[in-house]
Image (cartoon, rainbow, N blue to C red; front, side, top):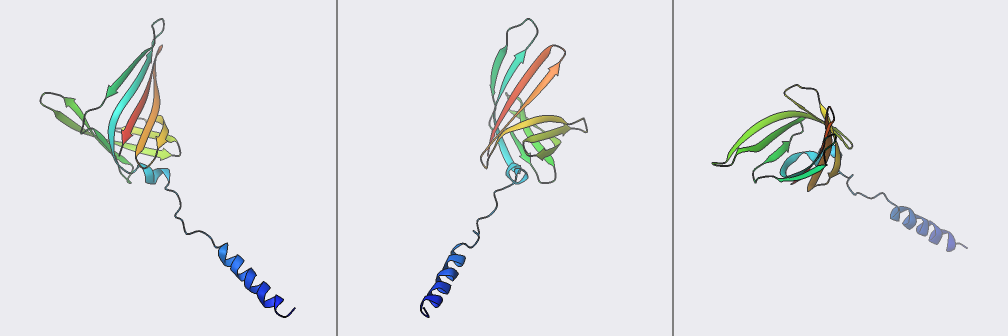
Amino acid sequence: MKKFIPASIMALAIFILSCNKSNDPAPPTTQELIIGNWNHQKDIVWHKSAGMPITKDTVNQYPGEYDDYRADGKIYKTYLVSLAPPVYTHDTAAYLINGTVQKISYHGAPYFTSDVQTLTSTDFMYHFVQISGTDTTEYWTYFKK
């Protein structure tokens, strides 16, 4: 019996130590994932108009077009405005992101809301809907890091 008690205590100590919490880091937050330079890959656009067939366009983006999301709540955008010769322009917008909801405002205009469909360390895609009268346009915008 005397040998059983120390052996039991040792077994209990080994069990407790083996159940120690893991030191794995917490997964990154949405805000942490979105920070950085996102290369614009393509837009898929669906357009519906009353009495007209639905149209779908895929717009592949040009190299050099990107959105740079910063921790200060700003997006610095670079996009092509002329092909020959290639001319790029820059724009800045404010953004808020909470879970799967992203809000973007250009030049102090009201925020428009998009749904983040995919956000990983390498892929980012959001979707938004624009309605004007009887016209509805849906956009799926794809980025890669």
